[in-house]
Length: 154
Image 1: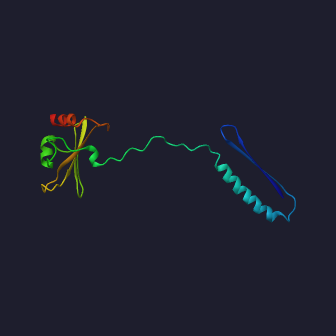
Image 2: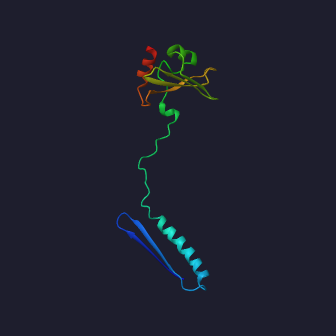
């Protein structure tokens, strides 16, 4: 048995065409040809696997990781207040999430969302606001002072 393998790239699209032609010669050579056919098939598979064209590469960088320091400190009148004072200012929170080292209170009025992060500081036993995050209800950033004023008006 003899075999021919041809491999050709067509044009700028880099489409691959491959043709494997086998012809029987004698039974003595069949064991050796089985090995050659297997090797040729494996080689052809490797060659054709590279014909898919360039892989899609995203040019946009991943969004940066934001730490608590990114949001800055809480504005005057909010910084250092405890949960009871926040509830007196803005009403009942939409969310009250308690973890081991932090408490998050979320207030909203349908226009903006304020997340207040309360941590235990060396000054008090009760957790107090150390920083806030404000955004519109669609997730876009908004001015913290305007959001606070909007929440206080309700």
